[in-house]
Image (cartoon, rainbow, N blue to C red; front, top):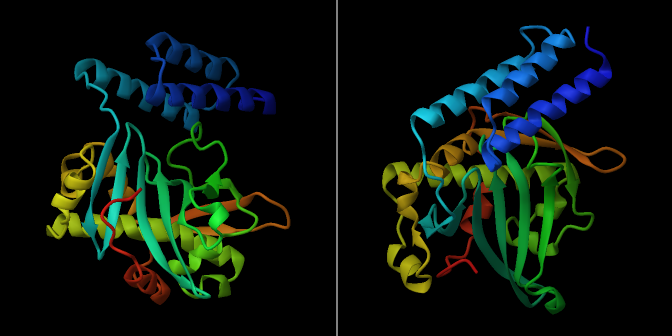
Length: 290
C-alpha cells in the first residue's frame, strides 16, 4: 500500500512528465516505463489514475512518432464577433482571448482590455486587465492579474478544482463590463468574471460556425501581423480549446483567507444570466486591441 510520501512522489513524477510532453524537453519511452515501475514497486493499484495518465502519455508519444507535427508558433487573430472586437492569441497549448470595454464614470472616460487565458482543456489560467485609459491616470498602461490559478503551467489540464490568487482590490473599471458588477457578492462577481470569458468563447465559436465573423480589413490593415479572426476555424490549436471553453462554467468560492477556490461544472441548459447580455452590448468596437 503506497504511503503518503509515495503518493506525493508519484504525483510529482507524473505531472512533471505531462508538463514536458507539452513544453519540453522531450520525454523518452524509458522514462514512462521507469514511472510505471515506481508505481508497481510501491503497490499502487493497477486501476490508479496515475497508470491511466501514463498510458495517455505513451499513446501521445507514439502518435507523434508516427505523425510528426511541426510545432506552430504564436498566431495573432483579430476581428469582430458577437458585436465586439476580439483578439485571439494562439500558442501551442493555450489561447488568450481579449476584448475591449470603455465608458464614463463620474465624468471621467476609461477603457480597459480584459483577457482570459484558457489552457488546453478549456480551463481558465488567469483573467487579466490592462488599463488602456484608467480612471486614475497614473495606472494607464498598467496590467493586473485579477484571478490567477496557482501553478497553472504545471497543473493537470482537465482539473475540476483549483486554488487561485485573487486581486485584493478589484479595479473600478470593471463597471464597464457590467454596471452593477460591484453590487454582486464578491465571490459571485469573481465567478461572473471567469464565466464571462467562457461565454465570450461561446459567442466566438457560434459566430465562427454561422459565418458571422468580420472585420478582416481592419485587422490586417492596422496590424500587419494579425490574421483575420475568421481564420481561427483552421487553427488546430485554438479551435479545440475554444470549443471546450465554450461549454464550461465555474463557481468561485472564497474562504476567510486567500486563496480562492475555482470549481468547474458544465453549463446548465438555461440561457446565460441577464447581466451577461448587458455586458456584451456595452462592448466598444475598436480597430485593434492594443
